[in-house]
Image (cartoon, rainbow, N blue to C red; front, side):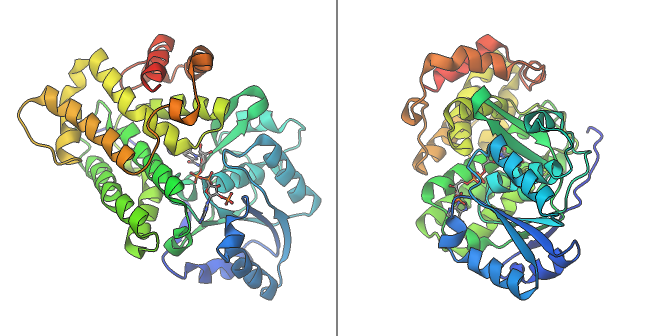
Length: 389
Ligand code: NZQ
Ligand code: ZN
């Protein structure tokens, strides 16, 4: 078992009605609030009105940063940061999915940024810069941004999508009822993202971190159980609640404690797809993951026992033929995504070979993929993209 460090300073209020903690949480930091949100879903579900009532009755001054995009853009980080400076903001209240939360984390750092080049600020961010306090209300179970310090920002002009450490939320309010309105597509994509956060670390060379393995398999089994229920019954509290808690745990780092770093190859490959084609993150991961597993199994058959374990412990498959089980587990993963309505080829999401070379080079531009569970070269990544067509 490897050494690890645990640090998650976020206070998480989970459950129906946990918005009751909003006012006291904000009051800890001040009265001038930047309210950030996305394209309007929070208005449709009445959450905007609920939040504004609390803010108005609590005597807060509110400045809005609306319209945060899925795959949030650097331009919005700049806009929000300038609003914070201009209005002397005390605390950011971010209401939405991972994109809104991520953008708000970068804005929290941007509020103190002295330079003009906010993209450079993102590139340089290591989670150590001064940042405004951030409180969030989560509306989509997917990224785990509510329980980590990371954020992913896109610069479409440069075809770059970059993940960096910014700041942890001080408080995250996680009420599963706010996710009742999430579309089937985003519910499935978010669940694929949760599963990917687990699988990226599950396929590791460490075999003796028992608790982490149990958490990983537990999260996967919980998503496999609850996603179809949430799709069939969008207002099923138990299903939505389980997906939401899985979201927070999956990307927190906890499931990988004691395991060797795997460098998250599918995320590196997916961020290129989003950077070039602005696709939904979880869909890109769902398309890539079974092909990546198939590819690395062929490249390095020594990983067969771990894939067979995945087939047995996660999918409940049985048999003595480890090689056959390994393949059946990958197929089960693919079929699960497909049966939950995720388009399972790049062609279906209008991506062709045109940028494969550039995307593969960019994915390999740092040494992370060389150190991945099974190391990947530019040629490997290109072949994996091709398998996804
Ligand atoms: O913009 P609005 O109108 O709010 O609509 C959003 C958006 O269109 C909608 N939505 C959110 N909550 C809803 C809702 N619709 C109805 N009812 C609700 N309650 O869903 C759409 C997608 O939202 P988005 O925030 O983009 O989704 P997600 O939470 O999946 O976030 C994706 C972003 O997070 C990054 C991804 O790369 C991507 O940019 N990631 C962040 C991570 C982190 N911070 O640790 C890790 C992840 O691996 C990931 O890379
Ligand atoms: Zn992800």
